Length: 126
Image 1 (cartoon, one colour):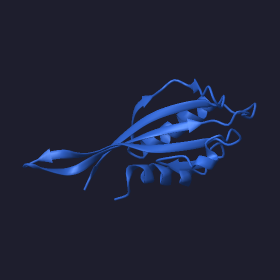
Image 2 (cartoon, rainbow, N blue to C red):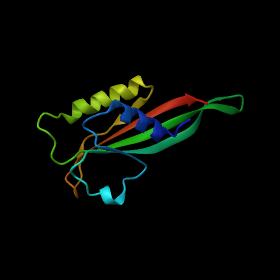
Image 3 (cartoon, helix red, strand yellow):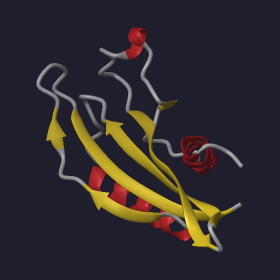
Image 4 (cartoon, rainbow, N blue to C red):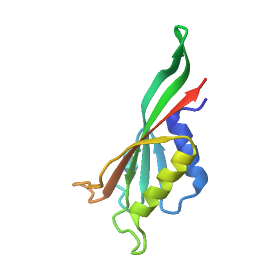
């Protein structure tokens, strides 16, 4: 079984989304921290707990992933981030992920980038 962040990364990469330039797992490399010309997605694990408890054991895992999107500063005029995020959340849902929370957009005070955070979870049998 792949790590939860690897599962989400694999799904996102398979979609070939033109609005996401890079997908990182766990951390953004130091040389890309100040990059404001690319839209970057950061995936971090939030849960990996036993699930489906029965007969003093567990039969599955509850997996959680935090999805952070850092939009490039100069977005195309015809690009609508909200529509893109809704499309992404629909694909995640159709792939068995539950959208736990979709946080409001914020602006990073250092880079001036609009950011978005989405939390997803999935229970999987082992």
